Length: 314
Image (cartoon, rainbow, N blue to C red; front, side, top):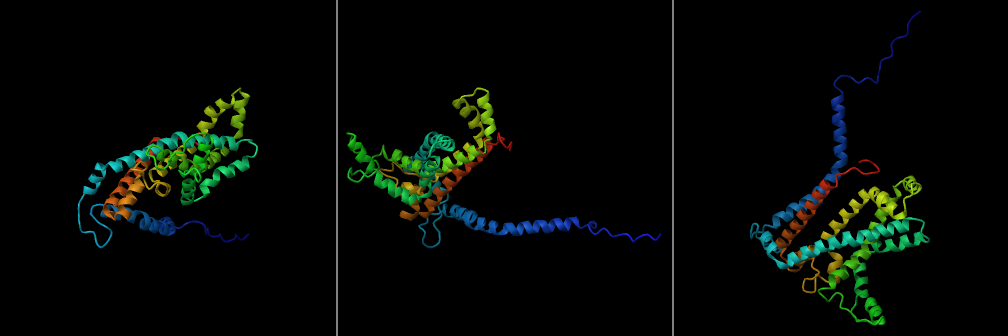
């Protein structure tokens, strides 16, 4: 019986073809990443390098930078009392955000995420302020905090209850709490949405097993829900801290850092010198300080939160 001819194995790679194929894959990956790399270099790396360069000059933004001052801008910033006030206010907003804004968002997320009557309505109402732009939110709060009782909503309520109208944005002691109230109203819905997403990832069987074992509502929250939400809480805290350090639009529109620099933030301080007084070299140095502060916090955050997630193990 005549045997059939052997069929060649067309799927077997020839010797030496693995390396070129790998090189082609790497080239394809690089080509796909190239647009993102170009945009990152153009809009992130280049502005940072340019700010570092201009921070070494006494430059007003017109013409080439020729008045080289070295590190004088950086030294003068640390000697300025207003910058230290701005730094203190930034850390104060961070402390208030972590101790008031995030716990409030978490409590609302737990309440709205459960079988609360009308929870869809409450989700919409709580998240609506985040949809508004910061400019619109600032203008709304300017109206709400107007010192004129005939125009200001809060002062009208205080007078109706028998109190006295307060100059919320004109008092050095009240302006920062008033701005923080506006910030909380604007952003707590965003953090609430993050916590609600984290709650949806928690299997219901875990909480049901806790109830079977006799765990009450508070114990269920503190010993089951909070540990399983740890990664979401860390993410929310990270976003809140960076947002507090870079806060500008709402503060500038509501108070412009006043009165008497009582609500000054690092971003408003940078804008005042860079674009109001046209001291762009000095303003660039302030921007470098802000960048280093945010970078330092990010590195420390990544080091301290390098823990496995309770749900995914990652």
